[in-house]
Image 1 (cartoon, rainbow, N blue to C red):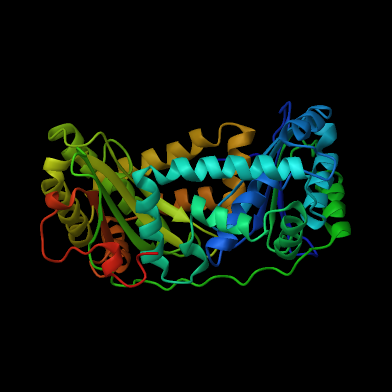
Image 2: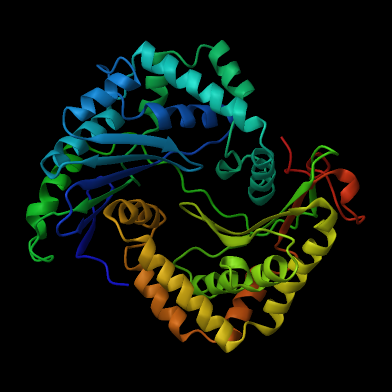
Length: 443
């Protein structure tokens, strides 16, 4: 794929600044990604609240007031938290870009929240966490994260609970001043990513100083803020036994999840493992989708991919199936992974997967907003916007044996975290353990 002209630099304060000149775009997309880690349930709660509150300032009586202030500039702004980050997304008229960046940088370096805004954020977060607790996937992902990363790891706290929120509220940590102090101690532009996509007027990439200089000035004048958090390491395979998350006996659907430590995008094995996943279950023409969906009708679909964080990646496979078909489906998944590790894909099979994955990226970057969001994630993870073209070039020359070898190196049985969520009576085998029976997999 060919991207519009783009520019990437690292500012004096440690921010990755990326600008893409999308000629003819009516509006400009701005993404700001900040490194915000969670070391325990307390900091997970605070990270989620900061994800909601970050764009709001001391004059915003609440979220509606903030929206009105943005609309005065023709802008729309939203934000949210993730396992290792807080992301702010803004869509602004081109002549308001510098103002929008200055406003957001001001919120990072001098956070201040009104009582009304904090009350609204806490109420919304309590509602979300209460509702999330009722969903199977919340507990499934929590167990997978703890099993993947181990106790105390910053990536092991994807979602706090409503009870965690209540404890902080009781301890007085959720009043506006306390939240502002917490934000001031944690928010930094050192290690952050800023991506701008719009009609920047660079004449096809020949006049970057005029477009990038004002943005760099905003970031350099502001300074970095708090120290950057330490980069979490990857513990690698932890040899976790097969896990069962029990659900009600009346449930008719079972969930199957496979996770495994994976190389980051910059690693030479990543393109081959990406195609391994595509052949395995990455699209409707893949092996598992053809077998389990088209031939047997046991699943609606199988999906594979990567959960990519700033300093680590995880290979992920997901599917749901009828409870009474769980054993057969689960065995087919493991057998198919083993077959691909041993023999690799066929030549035609690999070419079809490469064609699909390459075209999917091209279609997925068809708007400035899509490119801004995906680009911010890629750059925050330590890569550049050349990633997609680079990977497409590598994929075009991959041989089946290289795909098999990548699978053997990274998806061996000892590396896989194999989890099912189902009624306990539906899961057979003596090697299955509940999370509370495995150190590091439960709360």
